[in-house]
Amino acid sequence: MLKVTKFTTALTATALGLLFASEAFAADVTWNVSLWGKRRAFTENVEKLAEEVAAKTNGRFEIKMAYGESLSKAKENLDGISFNAFEMAQICASYHADKNPTLTVLELPFLGVKDLEMETKVSMALYEHPAVKKDLARWDAMALMPTPMPQYNFVGNGDVPKTTKDFEGMRVRALGGIGELMSAVGAVPTTVTASETYQAMESGTVRAASFAPHAHLSFKTVEVGTWWTKNMNPGTVQCPVVVSISAYNALPDEFKTALNEAVAPALEHYIATYDKVYEKWWPELEARKIQQIEFTDEDLAELRTKAAPIWKKWVSDMDAKGIPGQELLDLATSTIGN
Image 1 (cartoon, rainbow, N blue to C red):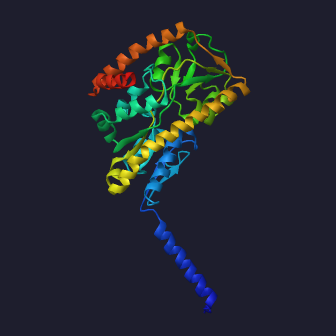
Image 2: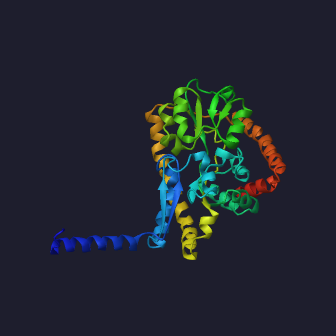
Image 3: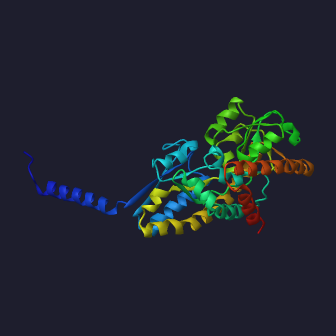
């Protein structure tokens, strides 16, 4: 029989106290976020969102990060949302264009987006369009905020492309509208995910990969690359943070308000963080002696000419799906122009 002493009684009281304290401070609601890779500039909007939500609710609403595809593969995040495997995820439209065709309007090449602020503005306008809401609702998803991405460029190895014609026959990692553009110049685009790209370049499966600078650093393509297209700037990808409609509707009103109000500071933090990426990017290129290629105005003009039929085909494809393609494209271009 256990001999009860003042010491054991004190231990029991302490343990009970800790138990009650942990219950008292436990979050009322916990959401899990499905992410890929590791924490980087690309995920800072989600990190800041979680921080803001916790602060606004005194820790009663917790948003937990799950990196490294621990909850779902990057291409299956919309599926995970649809069957309530988690409540929030980052997605990239071009990973599964058939699942979110309306979002791909912002992946068309040479739309003319100049900076991350404009990418944010046009993305948020798009998310409010009824066709986009209906499109994502098929997966019980709604777009909460963008992960605004700068213009993509290629890091590659092997023979240096002196003109855009030198991409003919080259296997490249290029998604969405960038992939279609590269196909138009004779390249062979593939939809390798970000996490798979280093191995694909190392093994020679692809010769070059298009990313924003942060991803070239995070996914280490600079370690296997010898050249970079400094001024091609063909376009970017559309990567929103989506949430489960069911989970959102189940939130208390004060938690909904906290989540919605956290979006603006999350995006401000993201853009400020991304500005610092370039402080690492240029020295990294120089340190690795990666050749920076600048194409002529004539080459770039030819690329823009090849983009026009891609826009037209996109509108036609959307019309065939019963989606107001021209309306979405007009919304994008008018927002960019303002």
